[in-house]
Image (tube, rainbow, N blue to C red; front, side):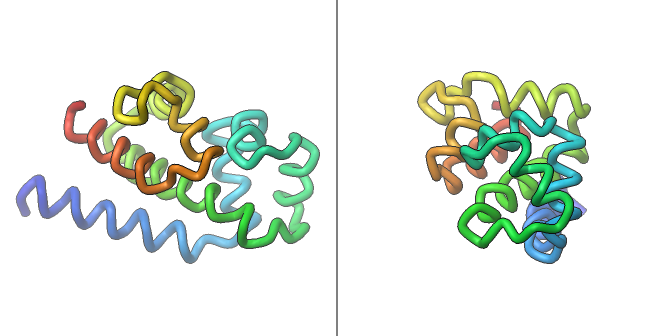
Length: 125
């Protein structure tokens, strides 16, 4: 399989996983990987709200969308990057996002742009 084919398959798998993961597993995975404060920042909520969502309180689809995109990006990056690099990528200024961090971009609803920035990062940019 070529690198392009395997990259495309990884993106498809990441997308599928982001759709089928339960809310509690989603929030648990994100807080483990990024920390509750960063997850709360992305959805403009406080850490106690994130804890309630992790315990099963319904977050609602509007709040879950940026979390599912965040999860999808993490799934894409995990195959090639260390956890510390993934966290740094979400927090750091990104030239693909007009120097916003991916966390800020997700907070601002720039989902497609964030996915494109993740693909660019994986391609070496």
